[in-house]
Structure formats: structure tokens, C-alpha cells
Amino acid sequence: MTLSEPGSMIHAADLRKSFGGFEAVRGIDVDVRPGEAFGFLGPNGAGKSSTMRMVAAVSPVSGGTLRILGMDPATDGPAIRARIGVCPQEDTLDTELTVWENLFVYGRYFGLPKAEVREKVEELLEFVQLTDKAKAMVDDLSGGMKRRLTIARSLVNSPELLLLDEPTTGLDPQARHVVWDRLFRLKQQGVTLVLTTHYMDEAEQLTDRLVVMDKGLIVAEGSPLALIAEHSTREVAELRFPVAAEGGTHEPLAESVADLAERVEVLPDRLLLYTHDGEETMAKVHERGLEPIATLVRRSTLEDVFLRLTGRTLVD
Amino acid sequence: MAVTIAEVGRSTARSLSAGEATGLLLYRNFLAYRRAWYIFATGFLEPLLYLFSIGVGVGALVGDFTFNGQSVPYAEFVAPGMLAASAMNGSVLDSTFNFFFKLKYNKLFDQMLATPLTTLDIARGELSWSLLRGGIYSAGFLLVMLAMGLVSSWWAVLVVPAALLIGAAFGAVCMALTTWMRSWQDFELVTLATLPMFLFSATFFPVSAYPGVVRWVVEATPLYRGVVLCRELTTGAVTWASAVSVVYLVAMVVVGLLLCRRRLDTLLLT
Image 1 (tube, rainbow over the protein chains, first blue to last red):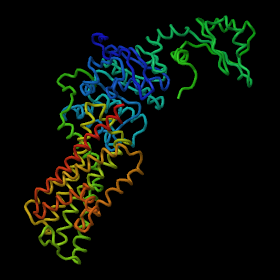
Image 2 (image 1 turned 45 degrees about the vertical axis):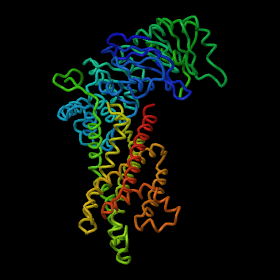
Image 3 (image 1 turned 60 degrees about the vertical axis):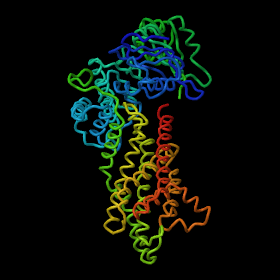
Image 4 (image 1 turned 90 degrees about the vertical axis):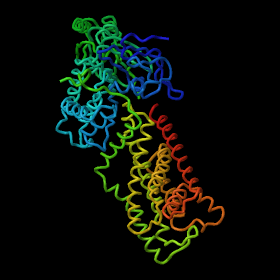
């Protein structure tokens, strides 16, 4: 038996989830500390949402240990849910009620007194910039507004732990930045954030620590910077070539520069040279007489780490 | 502005008692229906129109006839049948179409389960709502019956709880069955079950009109149990046999509710 780290918001040991014969989560260990912003990254089908549902105490654990705020979801489901906020992947707003009613009724489900919920609803509407939409029906809101309303709703019980499943998927850049800004503020106020995303910039922006999941397992763990340092190089030199002819690849080109980089990745239209100093590598490439149609030197990102760990194959 | 954590002087979130949870679900449904009260009205009108058309109109041609050894006007015979049917209709509407919408489209129950509410709270709350709706219809109908002089016993006071029981029985069973529905087309099955019951459960003519086996089948239907119970109460012909109907309907409530809760667990807590 594993004991929870003292004060751990989420403690999972060898956590598993199966649906019939399919194992969606195949034994993961996670500890989320108070006040941190923790991310689950992974392609579709990696087991992120299954994990989140177990943590939200709405999906029974199939195996291993799970403690949320020190409690067992199997026996203390309602008590756990009273203290956490959940922002699900799809907006599950009550379409038969107005914006204001959505928040008010939801707040009352948490056993909070009417007067306090009323006060809280006003604060939250302000917080997500929906005050002037209070009387609108949910269906009349834009996608970004619905998302903000869902986030507001997840805060109505002043949660200690906020779970966000792909908080900005499907939003335009403006709406994404508004959501990020609100999440930053919550973090500053000491709320522990746990989010899933497949936007790497979102993970870099928001999380202190993250795990990369693939096929139900954790394949890497650390801060965004540490992960980049561990699984990629400091910089990437991109060499763009015309798309390789039918049946051919840029494999021969890659071999001619293989010694210039720690690792070379071959794509149909370009070579990626993972290297410590991109400019220097680029100069050497030109010395060898290669003539790419375009070049780019950039810092390694979490996306490079992600693709390295989970592959470029399309996952559905 | 701090929107979260440790706000001094504020209550903390907690689990709800069964009564509080039911009250909140009723409140939520009240808010949703406030904008659609006319939908509420049609369920009340239907049995009333039947009462006027068949009970009063056709009744004028039929004249008085003998029920339980006493002579009663036809309208007085039909009225309790319509009362029982209205309790069924009100509750079936909420526990099939509306329940399906909340379960599959509005994802209402998914939202609720992210809070301290449980699947039993949901089943109980939704059933209470359809009960309340059935109860309002029945009470209104009883008033119309009184005004038309179609009530001949003080037992009739008990017809409102009887109608509630009918509503609860149909509501609980229909909610459970609705969890198996795949699309709106499946609701034709609901009509297929309720329409014959409405027409043939001794609502418009006595069950003695049926030959042997058919009569047993009719007597075993839930609406028949409701109809005779209501008729026994409004005409004052209550006997120990009335208890059979009560036990039958209570059993439907319990079985339906437990089954519904189990199905919600399977569907929503995966």
C-alpha cells in the first residue's frame, strides 16, 4: 500500500481504468502538490480524459490507489466533489436556463446559502466578463462565452482544486488569451490547477509541471523547461526542400548532414536538425553546398518533445 | 478580488440531504418551465376535453348505469377514469421525453454529478417533479369534478394522493425504461403502450365488458389499477380490494426508482 504524501492534492499510484476489455489508463503514478499548476499532455486516446474523470470522482477506479484531497473517491465522492471544480471538455451548460440561473442553481447544488450564491454569481460574472449577458439564454452565447461561463460555474463553490479538461480547445486566439489570463489569476490566488491539453503553448504558458501520456502510460514528467532539456536540444535548425518526388525521400540529404546535429528528423518537405547552436549548424550546412529553399533557426519547444515522445503518426 | 478559497465568513460547500437535493431539482425544473407554461397547460386540457366530449356528450346518450350495485350517471363513471389517465399522462410526459432530453441532449445529469449530488438524488428529484406535475393536474381535475357535481363521497379527498401514486408509479417505471431509449423514434413505443391503456383500462366502460382472459389482462395493467382506485374513491365504493391497487402501484414506484438509479450509474458513472 502506498501512503499519500502529506498535503498532496491528488495522489495516484498504479492507477488504472478499463472499459470492458480496453485498458485506457494502464498504471500511472501522479502526485499533485497544493498551489501548483499541473498538466496532462498527450494525443487523443492517451488516457487524459479518463484520468480526469476518475480524479473528478465521477468514474470508478478500475485498479490502483487514488486519493483526492486525502479522500477516497469510492467512498467520499460527494465530499470530494464539494471541494473541487470541474470544467469538462464539452460545455455541459443548462440550455433551459439563463446565464445567471446556470450559475445560481449550480451554486445551490453545493449546499451554499442563497444570499452567498447570489453574491458569488455577481463576482464570477464580472470575473469572466459576462455581467451584461446575465439574462441571456445559454444558446445565444458564442463559443468563447460558453467556455467562460463553464469556467465560472466550476468556481462557484470556491474550489481548492480546479480540473480543466482541454480548457481552450475550439476557441479563437482572443478567447484563449482571456481564458489563460483568468487561469493565471486563479493560480496566483493559490488554486491548484490540473489541466489537460494538446496545445503545447498552453502547457508551456500555464503549467509548472506536467506529464506526457501516451497509450495509457506516463512517458515523461517534469517542468516544461526540464522536459525540453531532457528530450530535445536547445535549438532546432529547419531546412526546407521541395517535396520529395513520388517514392523518394530526403533520407540521402539527411545522411549528408547527420554528423552536424544530435538528431536529424526527416519530413516530406524538410529536415529538422536538433542542435545546441542552430546558427552554427546552419553555417556548416551551407559550407557543404546544400541549398535549402528556406531555413529557420528556432528554440526547441514542448511540441518537439511531444512529437518525439508520442510520434508523428495520426491518432484518432 | 478573490473569487476562490478562504473567503472569510463564507460557508463551505457540502453534501446535501435527500430533501434539500429534491427541493433543488424541483426548483431547477420550475425555472426551466416558467418560460414554457403553455406546455404545462396542454396536459391538463386533454382529459378535460375527453370528459366533456365522452362523459357529458356521449353520456347523454348512454344515460345512467349500474356500477358496484348502485346507479351512477355515465359522466360520474368516466370522470375518475379521466383523472387517473391525466395523472398518468402528466407523469409520462416528464419521465420520457423530458427525461430523455435532460439525459442525452442537455447533459443535465452530467452537470449535476460533478457536484455533491448523486444518481439517487437525480432519480428521486426528477420523479418528484413529474409527481408534482401529475398532482397539480389531478387536483385541478378534482375541482372541475366537484363543480360539475360528479363527486359523491368524502373518500374523494383521497383521490389526490391516489393520483400522485399513479403518477409516481408511471414516472418511476418510465424513467427507468427511458434510459434504454436510443433515439426519439423509440418514443413511439411509449404511445403504443399508453394509448391502448388510456382507451381500454375500464376508463370509458366497465371491465365486465371483456370476456375471461382479456379481462384478466386488462385488470393487470397499471392504469386499470389506477382507474378503479380513483373510481372507488370518488363513488365511495372503497373495499379491502382497493388495497391491491395501492400495493401494485407502490411496487412500481420502488422497482422503477431503484432500476432507474442503477441505470444512471451504468450510463453516467463510467
